[in-house]
Image 1 (cartoon, one colour):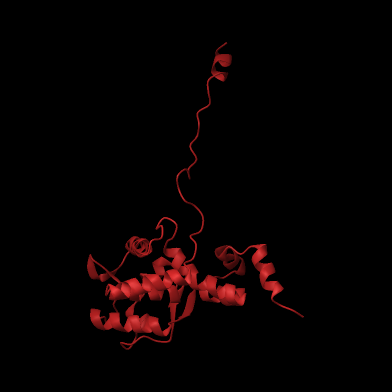
Image 2: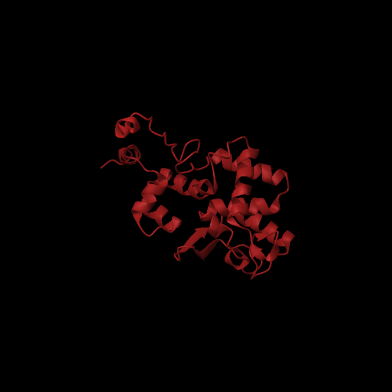
Length: 210
């Protein structure tokens, strides 16, 4: 009798862990979004933020690697370099280019902030010898996104990392190049990271005639 009674009790409804949460990869920014953020940071005179944003786009680094950048990584002699090499959190070295506008932004920031080799490029409020935290960086990215009218819940630090990599892939179809630029050890990781679908591959294949 007791077993029958228990069997008639309604089952507890389990709430999905992701209820109300946005999951999945954050999309890359579009070129017009990049220019909007750059323009706004320039107009507002936010020298540090402009240098950080431009470096994040060009370097294609993870947030933890962006905040770990040292002055000598990008401006060893007081002026920014054309190409830089840094070691990622994974231990893999990765090279990246600094475009002219990024070099200008870095040079302006280094000069205004009086940055010296040995220092972190982007320091925390808690002390000049401490780098900015990834959480502080994420808050900044959300602010930049919101300031141009986009939903900060839809975009994040990985959006900045994916922006240039995605654009390079779409323009060239060269997965190996993107793999090297992102510092991935396996091409499969790059495929997953870019969210490449069969339709993407077919679209690229259709552009090639023999």
